[in-house]
Amino acid sequence: QVQLVESGGGLVQAGGSLRLSCAASGSISSIHAMGWYRQAPGKQRELVADITSGGSTNYPDSVKGRFTISRDNAKNTVYLQMNSLKPEDTAVYYCNADIGFRGNWSRDYWGQGTQVTVSS
Image (cartoon, rainbow, N blue to C red; front, side, top):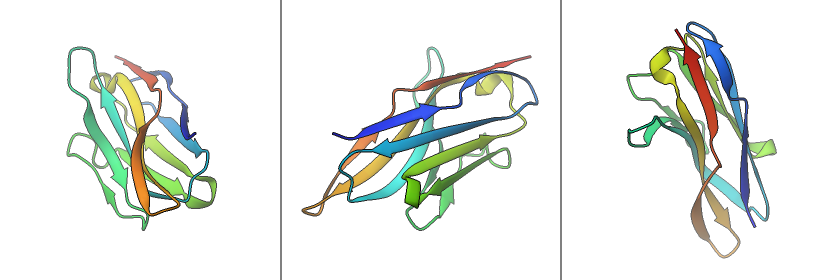
């Protein structure tokens, strides 16, 4: 059984910072790409950032220069440092990981989500 457990969400004023963490646990052989997505009320879930096992990162223009994704492979953990937060960043943030298992197969997993609210 694999779990992704997120932490670090909360309420912050515009211009502030938050750091999200997501730890994967269970019978994991390897973790390929990891990422963060968000979903605001009435909107579709969208990519915020992702990172390959080798450390290559990808961001949409809406967060580029403000958010930084990183990972600690030894801890099976991915982080999202969010700076210069804006009210439009308010959403539920979800962790995602492509996890590999013995037998050379993999599956996509999602965390339970953590609320980030940015007040103006």
